[in-house]
Image (cartoon, rainbow, N blue to C red; front, side):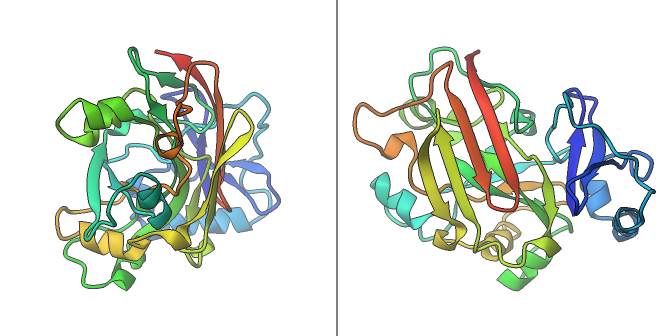
Length: 286
């Protein structure tokens, strides 16, 4: 299933994109797309049954309808740094022996077509297309990558916007360059795991002002999805509705020759993970 949330910011309602590409209203079946729904097998079964029964779910007119983040009430966003061989190479970093972790606050999440704000004083705002993993079952001390995959509810396209000066040159942790307002566009859809048979076979692409900048595949991940979930479960409990941003392939501004083409107000970024939908953001000053 392709689950999404539509409407004005803060007042989104649950929806579904059916097999024919028609947008359907889910608000008569479930209150929201969130961790409670993803953890409730019976509720998901009701959604599937409604989707498969003609006439049950009202059609929505997508014209002028904002698409919000596909997941509400996100618990935490755990991010994996330097998780692609080619990205580590382009930045001159050693291949990590264990996953590098940082966090993004849930309030950085915006819709896939919402404005991204360049922070005040920013000189190095960068782009990163990523595969987002959404947890559907509570995960503690998992024993294998296979168990890790079994705890995934679905996948989405994410844009891990980053301010490199804040992240690297201002001391402390990476979090200062990762948590600026609007720095995590998510969606358009949450695609349930049954529709993604191999999360390590997904092309990712990103364009800036129409120019292709990133063109990679999750096959290049250093730590694949199942292993990332297993690993994280030994350091923290993962709950339904938690999100994991799994890293970005080569092609970010930081990895390019001087003068590096960092983002500025007026730029347009488009990105996609194949099968998970496309995003488009116009950048403005904060």
